[in-house]
Length: 353
Image (cartoon, rainbow, N blue to C red; front, side):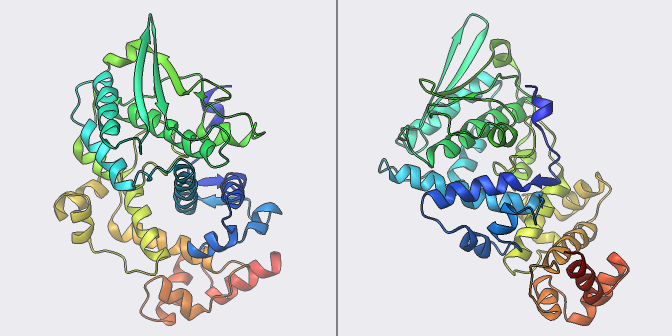
């Protein structure tokens, strides 16, 4: 099975990926609809089960993936009385390796970082035999853990994607080896993680040509700051790819809007990315975008989602969620975006549902 065949566009994520995450969360006692409500996503699990929602925008899936994987990883750690590894610690690991000279140094430094966390991040090590290098990740989770499989696959995918991104090209692997038994996700999991899954292995690992260990790190600290706005939860992006700066800004804006918080100013965004306001605008301009463009795109996307058949929000409430001063200003903007009023759009969607 080729890596290319396993990839999907990050713009539209198949609903069965979301369904798999929610079903795993349900298996450990979490209520899927409460998760969706907490994230303010405009659908329910039955919409996924019965095909009423076929795809999710990438930003929604990133939200859902982050929430579900955090729940699953925390549960898997509690089963062994281990505190979870936080997103801040994941970010710090990335900051620690960005200054390495080559991939081998990156892996060895990541192993040292995880060792300092006393088992919470698992144990990493590297074996090299002839022309093959093997990256090992022991997480101390129970091999029959319901939540452990997705958590450990996420960990393996994280390291493979991080290492590939650092050297600027995808590291070829045959698949992810895991200690868990095959639970029947023959289609969904390989598509979600871009590679075949090798079950019932002695440990969690992936193998790659040893020649890649000498590949130099080509990414900068500044690009890492941009990457970490969405990484490692943007699993639909293939390893080694060039992340769009405007895409990182878009994810941050959608997150703010989803939480009902105001969109940051250019100065605030520049501070988040550790750059000047002029550099922030220049980075967007390099992709033929402005902050205004990205804000409008996010508002339009969320407006269409919030006016869907399953949503019962009033027009004034939608306007408030999107940061408009009033419903009248929202109606003007929506007509520019779609050529019709929010009421007419909602009526048309309800009639075709």
